[in-house]
Length: 272
Image (tube, rainbow, N blue to C red):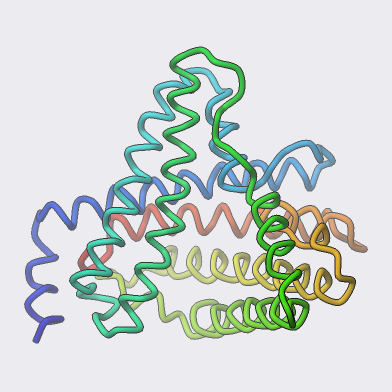
């Protein structure tokens, strides 16, 4: 009953619906910048940080970066607020069970972190202070968290299990979306172009998550938290493999596709 009532309300111009669509557009913009930085890595510019925090720093350094950061910050806070509301009330499209709400809460926490990083960069940019102020990169955060856990009793096994879990999530996402196209259930229009963007985008994200999981397993096996890393480290690791630049370029194109899909979802999502 909740799904039916909320789906009807979600099709209208409700404020929660607007929050979701603004947030999805901001998510698309963020992934678009990450794709640009990944492509730079593929063509031999290793200094770029192809992570959400690195993308925020990149935006800050562009012409009109101050104003772009204002828009990005607003969109990311909208995204976080939307998922917080989903965690409380459920989502008319993706469900309202306890597991769904837990998933929304986890996403809200991640998006809130991105929004705070963007706000910090925006305030630093407008005040003229040095640096973006966005804090640690995702790779540094991953290493610190891994170093903390790996020192626990059975810490190596815990880190390794998390790595296996991340790889399992990557396989699940690839099967669920890149193959089965389950993301189309969220959309009100069955467009071939959007379907293609979604499959390519989720496929690329699956590859990156699988590499992140592999890095965690490597950190556990070697007892070296410096082996762990986030999105940027995973992309750099892809670049270092045989044929890596070509593979990384394909992943970058996939991330571009995911960015475009996020914008398309903001337009065609059945309810937000």
